[in-house]
View 1 (cartoon, rainbow over the protein chains, first blue to last red):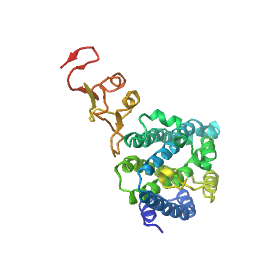
View 2 (cartoon, helix red, strand yellow):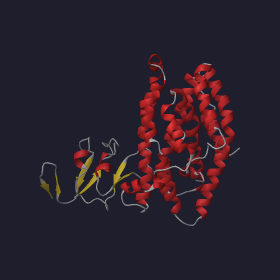
View 3 (cartoon, chains in turn orange, purple):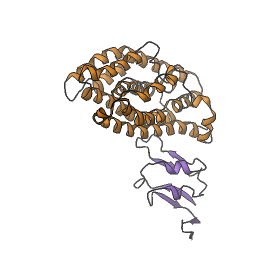
View 4 (cartoon, one colour):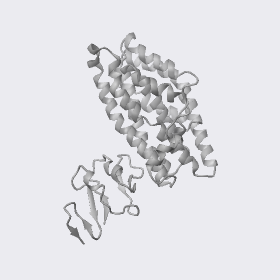
Length: 246
Length: 75
């Protein structure tokens, strides 16, 4: 197992404040995630090493554009406004705290987008952020998630989002840690340093929600369905910003 | 005249960054709290950012010949 993943598991995944069926369920899902997380860390390290070997700074712009395209302000906005509507009115009150957590994340995602743009501004690749509006590389994702995950999850069950957080935000945490373990560059650190803390917070949000809310088979079902989707072989490709190939 | 940010007052809303026509306001380098900084070399002193700042004093004018929002000129 990659040491970065081992450290992540020991520090953030396994320590749990309480026990119960939600925690047991999360641990079962974690076992499914680990082989994918391990592969992603190796991939992110290799990608960072390849970037360094390129002998050019262009990789920073490539990562920044990909990060700009992959950030989730729109998805978070949609989710905050619609995820609560995926359950009956009578059930909505029990999920209102999940919606409040989502509201905080919108702020994070917007700030992350600014950081990606700032790499391009400070590095001299663009003069104004508006230039990114005309650049497809900063606005599209060459991944299934562009039309699949991103489009689907806005209308997901509130608890399904917890599964998405647990798996996808962990990829962000691991991808950033792997990248920063290889690349020691001021602009890359600028792009990732605050993100690192916030992606961890998003991951912990998913962890807490599964532990605290996924207490019955009925509650666990939408979360398990998300893992079934995310853990398909074609799904776990990380963004180029985090060390993915595309 | 130039503009700078008083970090002790700034709430990191980012409105000055949005308002700046020169993109002189940047997220502060490697700052985990998402504070902002005005790059002196890029600031033209136009003052377009000033009316948008929601916290009195968080954006501060400095340097010669700065003009307050009330129109007073200072050396």
